[in-house]
Image 1 (tube, helix red, strand yellow):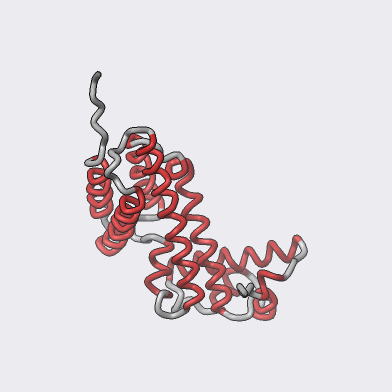
Image 2 (cartoon, helix red, strand yellow):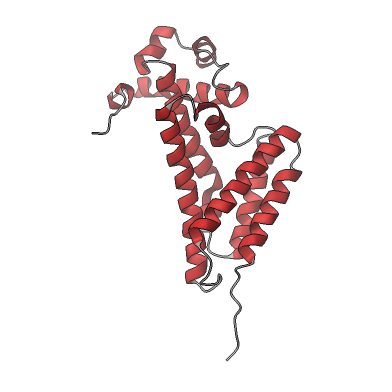
Amino acid sequence: MKKTSASAQKTYTSRGAVTRQRIVDATTSLTYAKGVETTSLDDVCATAGVSKSQLYHYFADKDALVREVVSAQVARVMAAQGTALTQLDSLAALRRWCDCILALNREAGINGGCPIGSLANELANQSEQARALLVAGFNTWEDRLAAGFATMQANGELESTAVPRELAIGVLCAVQGGLLLAKTSRSQKPLEIALNMAFDHVANYKAVRRRC
């Protein structure tokens, strides 16, 4: 039977829900800027403006709080891509999605990296529960890309030899690698190159429309 955390089972007053969300938001910002390991519960309390007893009322321990952060970051990354991801139905739409990823990285200051990827780097070997949430997050992203490529194929824009799932995995790998190198070099260029190569790879499967 699937286990549900105690904090997820609880119901809260409207004020309590706001306080809990403030704790999650503070932890999300801190871990993105500093990393999970170096973010202490004291840091969270100071940033969120809550006491330790308040924090423990909502979360059993730091691990439980971090799992909530993983879920929050996955939701934010998916939402930030908006219709650029959900309406991925043509090569032109794929180019718009690539531009969206570049714009989001610029807005984050280029050296922030992918919120999900950064958490995966820290937590994949530390917490099996957090790793499972991260896998689910990447799978959601992959599924949406694959659905877009399948739509392109159904519309006759991509050849029948294209494998939507494999294209999705390749594009997602390009995004993650590009974001990591952009963060390390503090330059947008690696991400631009990675996205252009990913786009070109997908475009290689463009269907040739033959005249009757």
